[in-house]
Image (cartoon, rainbow, N blue to C red; front, side, top):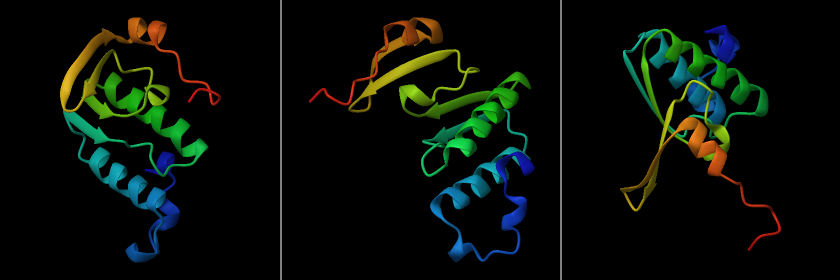
Amino acid sequence: MSPLGINTLRHKELIKLSNGETRRVMIGQALLRQPALLLLDNPFMGLDVQARKTFRGIVDHVAASGATVILVTTPQEIPSAITHVLELEEGRVAGAWDRESFLAQYRPESPDQP
């Protein structure tokens, strides 16, 4: 699991891992099982910029291998292998799109907007 950068964490005590390091270890553990379905809740939270980029590539690779990937994330963090997007509001489906349609209509809020 060197793409996640966890080899250097082998000798570190679990209690001393940062949130991002712990998240990377947990993701690596899940990927080692070669799941047919990978369900991730905010997998990018706590990861630095490089780890986010690497992880998007890993998600793309896992999906290309035939696994179904479902993840909860922000619109800015949708990996390219994700083909469909559901928007949830208060636990209910508020919209459903294919990736291209969603990205075409999604406009991130600018920092100046209230």
